[in-house]
Image (cartoon, helix red, strand yellow):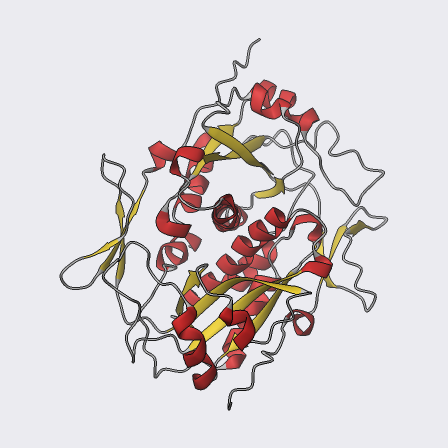
Length: 200
Length: 200
């Protein structure tokens, strides 16, 4: 059942750094991203794989990790991601407004992360990064735009979903055991009845 | 394997209109959308279900269907979608830039459509619609923004993936049997090597 895999596909921010990922696996995951639908079928997304330890270590300081955990600066040494997939927009292939490419990006990365979870690999979409990352990867900014960094690896933390409380606070938090809790809005709170009368 | 389900999850534009969908099923699918990751965990997406035949018929003329099939105005009577899921942005819950909500939208709708494909239901994300749709659904524009209309139903057409040719033409097309062909860029064409030297 896809539901179980969707539930399993949670953002993970602490990894078993020494369990390295092979590019063959990353390639399989990017292939799943490739197979997602695309607005106007324009398929403007491109991917870079980073598995090299030194390059990863140079990218790491330029990433923002978990906005709500204000006293946690990000994964410590030994917990850092063994791999990254870098998502780029190829401006030459973007036929519509850039917002369409962002929907594509959600589709593609969800395929990628579902495929990862199936292999007991987890990741975190990181949208907060400094422009230095583009420089480290020598991205041709005239053609490509860096959209997202996905950290990937074997999980070294536990994440649980829970229902958001009546106050609607959806900030994730960690308990004493460092388990990461993610409050989700209830189904009833996200479904709205059409206001239109069907008989007029 | 998730790969098979991803391949099966194709955009369908001709439906078995008389095979109606139950709101119970749509609710299950929206629950899958709900369980996707969300930037800042803000979960700003909301959903409306449209299964009513009359309301669906009034929405239909305001939708744009398949840009590359210039001589096809959209599904004929009997092939129109029996249901829609309308995706809205709740501006009150949007904590970051709107682009983050669009990535969320890709994630959520991919979960939804994967769950649909598992149930042999298919859909089409429609980003081209007239403002009249908001009026028909009596959407409170001060709070909500209509982002996407998803048509849903049992497929009445066949869709095949193929590899884009060397000319890079990615326009989908229909053959004489009205089979819908979708050219996908090759994996080798979407993976870029990091330019950064790892030893400096």
